[in-house]
Length: 519
Image: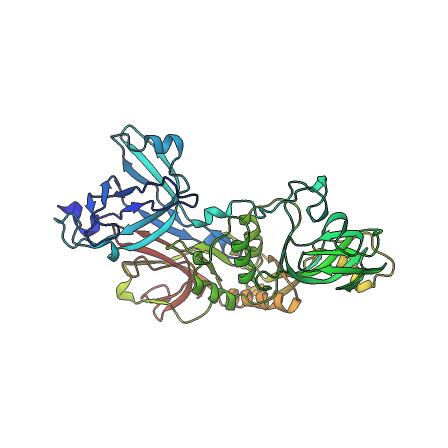
């Protein structure tokens, strides 16, 4: 029967586990055709119900995130299920499967007449691992399965550790229920949380918290812009502050007569980190719902660590935000992209990455090829790239008269920008505009490196191309570098670019790949 041939065989999907307590978890195994796993499979002799009605399509697109950065969600077409027997009734009514883990398998058909199609589950490709968003009943005889990826877990409060309001390090009643501050990397002039007068062993003194747990240390502590002398032992006097990095706190020698701010190096559990990739990973592992180390694609993160250099920082005071919002704040500073890979692992990618191609599509492997328009964020091409550095988290307006003029200027403004201007684009483009990245680089030199990298790509003339192929099925990921050769559009000698989008139809065995790079 043609329905059992490889092109018509859709992937079985099942729900093997949950992100919550595993008690009373049942596994649902659904397929496009009745399937029994082999005796030596894991699980053995398991039955997959023939409920999937249509093809399954998965894909990602980061094109709209170019020059902006952010999270890219892996999308899966909503899967139509046969529901003539009310299979999905309780699943839809009570949301019993919502949020559960999902895997999609693509199984080759070797023997169409065999109950296991002559193939082992061990030989199945796994084009998608994620979570179930919902099961909805859509008609008298059908239901719809909507899937999402592991980045869905980022839409949760960033800081789960809250002040108890019981005094001391837990703050007063006005702080009860508010999140404790988070500081990652190196930051300039933050406003720490005032806990009141607390006795940490050196007497009852004005106490401030910059981070909820151990950190590297406070480098500068100011009162109305005037730096205090920092000590690490004993009782601070007027004009002094004692640092308690193990607690993320400091104390002043006397009550301040104005705004208290600080420069610091943040979280140091287990070690201090200050790069884009390392800060983002620390955030995702230690905060929110806390991803496990196995949830990260180590190769992709290692590439991103090298592609996104520079010291940066992040600070969130005692106000609520989500992990997603915090992560996108970091990503937007460089235009980096965070995506969930096909296997459910988090990937960090730099759209400006350059390296040897990880895959190569010669003309004979290209079924179709077409150039695409650049996203609106890059049209027309900007004549200048501005990247922020030295972000001032708490600009001061009431400073002491003794503050030096240079310090006064920096402490009063929100931050500075390093600019890379292109005379080439200026001479060619009628509409002059600037592209700005709200980064948190520590130094101007580091911000300028990033700005110049963007300028170099834009001056080279960025291009975007979409190709259709039947190769590299189940393998293409956001952030990979690929080459395509095609006898048109100027690609005769090959076009090398970063993958910023892909879409795959499983049963049709076709994958569309979108590359972007210097043309």
